[in-house]
Image 1 (cartoon, rainbow, N blue to C red):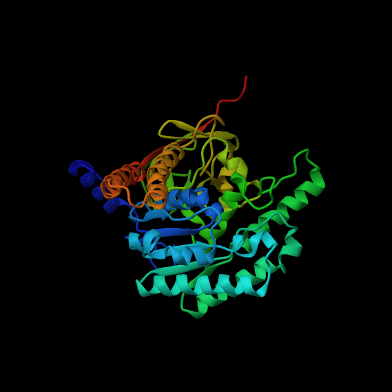
Image 2 (image 1 turned 90 degrees about the vertical axis):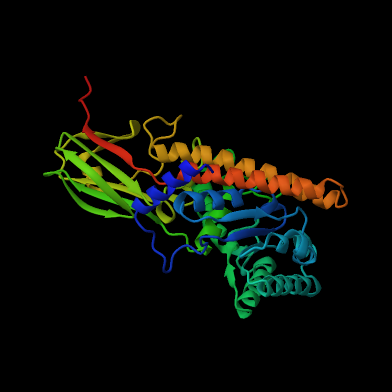
Length: 416
C-alpha cells in the first residue's frame, strides 16, 4: 500500500471508536487462519463469508485467511497433509470441519471408522497446538436428514465425541450441525405451512452438499462459534434541539437541523456484512440481521409523518416517525432493491469480489502443489502468488477503512 494511503488509514483509525477487546470476536489482529475440511469447505463459500465479516466488522485487525480443504477428505487425510497444507502457512488459528466422508456418507458408520476420525482429530489438534495454533474443531455440516432424527444420529454423536476430545486437549469446538439444524427446523415449518413447489432446503439434490443458503447457514454457525458480536453500532438522535442521545460503536459529529431535516456525520468502528444483490432475502431463515448485523439508527420526537433517510446521498428508504423512534436496522436497507443502499453496502459488494479474487489466486497454487509437486517453477510461483495475495489484502483493507458517512433524515413530501 502506498505511504499516503497508509497515513490516511492510520489517521482514520485513530479517530474511530475503539472496538471492545474483552470477550469479543475470537479472531485477533495478526491472526493467520487456515480452514481445513472436505468438499463443503473446499467450495470456498462459507469461508469467504467469514472472511468478509471479519474485514467489515473489524477493519483494524489484519487477519489472513487460507483455505486448505480438499473434496473427499477425511480427518485422517487432513492429518496426513498437515505439514504441507496447513503448518506451512504458520497458522495461529485452525478451523476444522470433518465427518461425512469419515463414515462414507453413513455407509461406514461403525466403531472402526469413528475411531479413525477421532484419531485424526487428535492428531490435528496435537500437531497444531505444538506450533502454538489455536484450534476450533467443528462438527460436520448438517445433512438433509430430518433434523429431529439427525439430532441423535451417528454423525452428530461421532462429532460430539470429536468436539469433546478437542476441549479435553485444551482447544475449542463449534457445533456447526446443531447451528444449521436450527435453520432447518424453521424451513420445515415454512414448508409445512406454505407447501412451495420447491421446498426450502440448505442442500443440493444429494442431501449432503450445500447450496448457497446452506453455505450461509454454515458460515453463520461458525461465526456464532467464534463469538461474533451482534452489534455493529447504533446511533440515537433526539429531533428536539437536535441532540445526540447515544452513539455506541461509532462517533457522531456535525449534528444540526430540525424536525423537518436532520443531518449528521457518523464514523463507525466497523461495518455490517452484506452479501450482494438480494443477499438480505436469505436472512428469512438465518437471523443474520438480529444475531450478527445490528447497524441501528433511532430518531425520536419527529412529528408524525414519513421520513426519508440517505447516507452520502444514497437512499436507504422511507419510514414513519413511529418506526424511526423504535429504531431501524439499516445494515441492508435500500430504497432501490437493484442497488446497494448505504455506502457501506456498496463497499461490501465490492469486497466480496476481492475476496473471490483471493480465492481464485490461491486455489490454483494449492492444486498445483498437489498435482505437480516437483514442478521447477513451483517455488517461484509460490513467491509471486504470496506477493499478489498481500496486494489484494491491502486493497481489501483500503476499501473497508473507517470513514465518516453523512446522514440526512428528511420529512418526505406527501404523495400527490
